[in-house]
Length: 516
Ligand code: C2O
Ligand code: CU
Ligand code: CU
Image 1 (spheres, rainbow, N blue to C red):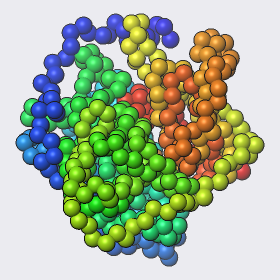
Image 2 (cartoon, rainbow, N blue to C red):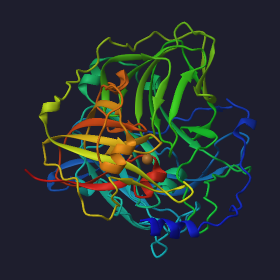
Image 3 (cartoon, protein in one colour):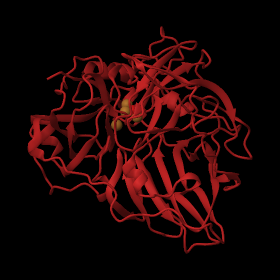
């Protein structure tokens, strides 16, 4: 190991790669563009379901293309990749139990416009430069439709996936998942929203129609010509950087947009679509809002908040009540930065949406239901001067033999033992889970002797983490425990850190769900 690291170290080149001058986003005039709302995806007819040819479901074809988009009034059009000419792509609207088929078509150009690191596993120079494969994040999906990172396809090719949607109402999202270049493809814009609805949600009479709005937040960096910049390490033979933090945040594809709202309740479906950035969202007037749902659907009851933490890939379903704020201008901030502005009108149409005191029962899974407990270390591998070169799950790499093999319909506790100095949002495909607790531990005892010695009290999950999740913050120096029932399908899936820079550089592992 030390030898390999030393080798990597010798490859470091002292002088920095020349980067284009970066635009200081704070020089842009804020709140001059209206918030775009992604179009709702429209099916192109129906097609038979695989293995059940008598059942027809809606069929969609979404083409990934390069296009130009005005991200701000005063910037030149930005080159992006998206679906059918938009990023975020069109929003899927479907109902629980209503399956659908999507043909994901790669109509992208043959060369990438962002810096590929060919030294990363899965991004070797002999592969086509542009490749894509789409995953439905949060979807309970058969393995062949899950967007396995190695199942990428080149321009001119496509893949048709079946989404059964046999799961509760929730905000899912679709995004690229290509091994080794996922961070670049998502950064280029390959992501979109996928909403599942059900009768429980319908019965709550939450704000809907034009009072329900998705907010897809992605931090980015632009050059003075308004083009996307992605940083490089300075080593031309290893341009990978261990994380990305942009100085500008796209909201549904615009910088600093505004939204005209009425003094009444709104439902915002918020997604942190950033590569690495953890969001800390507040409203400039200090007003309270309610979180009513998390990654996998509704919480048992609304959780009042003034400050929302959202790790990459996490979702929050929010109800914000602008009643009592008629005529105000309220800024949504990711502290300390401005993100977007709400302009509250003086009057409102009659209020129709409500915010019930209870939403959907969430039965806690008993820890005693678990038949297996796995200790899984989150490890950052540094070079000799402390620069991260790789991130690992349990010291294994992508290509190592599969070690996590849960049995279908069994329950397991996964202890995510974070030995690093960073919080890692850990995501499991296929399943939903509950957060049990977090606890500080002594890193040295663990790293040197594999001994788990706790140094702090058991911390329960935050109130807004008490629902069903598919992504969880594994905080630095803590053991984060989740409880998972492996339901749905047998086959090969993946689990990984959702910091895309980490995921691309080995912080992702396959797991197999085995038949009983
Ligand atoms: Cu959001 Cu494996 O993905
Ligand atoms: Cu996923
Ligand atoms: Cu990570």
